[in-house]
Length: 325
Image 1: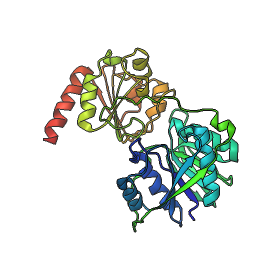
Image 2: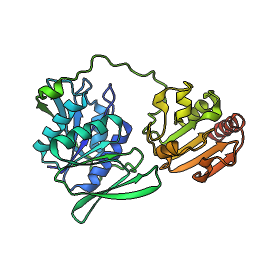
Image 3: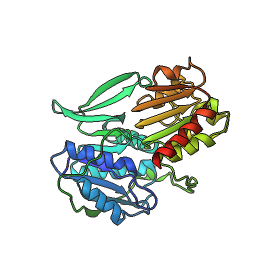
Image 4: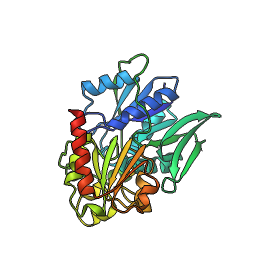
């Protein structure tokens, strides 16, 4: 049996969410056994493409978590995951660092006494313990945390691991792990779910490229959306932009919003306030476009353009289109 269990987050159609591939790659490099995956059976079954991809990454077993209660409720899912960890003998759970999974991790910690690290960007074995790396204090400190509890729960930020196939592909065995939820967990149920309108862009939290707008946009995100579409990226925003109602709150990046770590971050009209920097400072390459040469974001930018975003961004978009042919 594997000592690592990976939570297989998926869409409503049964497709894997992008960061799961990173988790499987990481798990495969940390264990000598095959990788086991937990699939919450919330109405979507793993399709052939998902199973083939999991097999190519080295997953040997896929456990469908089924229950008499709604596994979309974090309290219910936590009981199912705890039961599966016990059944498989796994001592580590890897999951994508998301709002939902942070709630799940909290329930697991209370129920099992597990050590929990969220927003990890590295994981290795050292001196007999799992050691997780992460940035803290608005991205200004890099830390290493050793998990010495019998059970470890590590939530990994998207874009932290380079995905690679397994040396030998596997044919995942799909089985069912049924569990009965407690009365306490079953008290909460999902009565309605509203799907967000599809934009065709990647999810903000897992996107490799993010184009972000702030107060300097004056509420017009059209040029930024066009740039994001050319780059195949997501669109984000500062708290000011979302508070003004220029864009939905789900696009907010920062300490009170989504924490991102894309390979490329482009901030247009973004001043670089500390609460926003805390949500994006771990980005691979930071490009800042601002008319104020003294804007704080230039202190952390790899490349800076002092200029009017309404002029710079369309020119950048046009040049990228030309280069792409």
